[in-house]
Image (cartoon, rainbow, N blue to C red; front, side, top):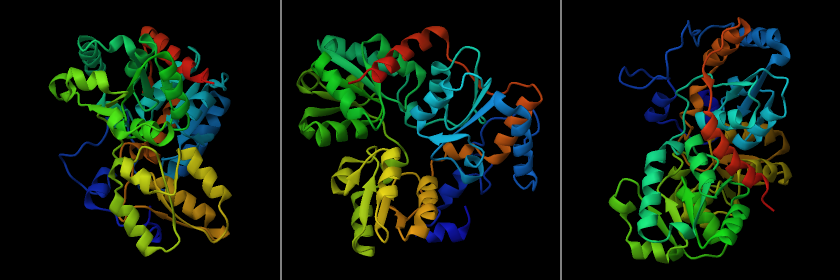
Amino acid sequence: MTTAQVQELDVQPTPLALLLLGREADPRSERGVECPGDLPSPSDPDLVARARAAKEKLGEKVFVLGHHYQRDEVIQFADVTGDSFKLARDAAARPEAEYIVFCGVHFMAESADILTSDDQKVVLPDLAAGCSMADMATAEQVAECWDVLTEAGVAERVVPVSYMNSSADIKAFTGRHGGTICTSSNAERALNWAFEQGEKVLFLPDQHLGRNTAVRDLGMSLEDCVVYNPHKPNGGLTAEQLRDARMILWRGHCSVHGRFSLESVEDVRARIPGVNVLVHPECRHEVVAAADQVGSTEYIIKALEAAPAGSKWAIGTELNLVRRLANRFAPEGKEIVFLDRTVCFCSTMNRIDLPHLVWTLESLAEGKLVNRISVDAETEEYAKLALERMLALP
């Protein structure tokens, strides 16, 4: 992203944002994984041509998926773009593709491996492209939480609902315990289904999506919700609190959406009279309550497509997507700005850059399988069960 493009969105990159994007040097910072070969230099002027040549050589053997939050330099090579679940389903619909190159993060590649055939190989260009939210709930922590619910005498009345942004292990736990997966688009349907199965829901791992859906869409109160903190004994909750609660929210959040604040909303309304504030449901409850519209990534795109010319929008989601939408709709006279004044990239999404993609495609073109993401059979069985319950939601 150029300085001019950043200025167009009325945001300024912070030193931390630049560091996470690898644009400043710090020998102590994480730089991803070492590739078993030579990673092309980011300054190589032939990177685009090399990626195009390798992709053409592979032909129908490769299918490149690009999440909405990816960099433009990567998204230009995607055969399809979308959110995590849409992309996983798109991969499953292309059985002729031997290699699925997932330009996203780790849990997304796992979901693609679960839904594709055994003959297909899912590849993540940089194995360090993880998700901070997904990492906030480990299998061991969730198993301990279930023990706490059991000791409180409520486990048999609890149905787990796990967000798509979770590891395969958490999806498998959900499948084993009669629960379902949800996306930000169908969370309301998933919760309605869960409350038909039991009296309480354990919502993993994003507390904000769970709270916003329960309160905003299902009409619950904030008092119906408690937050389970895996870093405190018994989750920081008493047995009485667990018995009284309807929504047991895991203490997790998205590092991108969680940074938006009520002050961000008030500031943009003061700066841009008549602006429409549109945010993702992973934002904090007070931000969602103050917004004009709330919806998933796909919802945000469709809302801007349908917006009248001359309308003004402040978007609370990842900056790569907001910038792309601002450029796309500028010719139609739609003013689209980032909700916060400072840059808010998804740093792990941005690990997938053009050098990693070139290295991946060229390796595959040479017959070398690299960075394969493979879910073991038992985990896949139960995770797929949870995903199938979601697909069967009314």
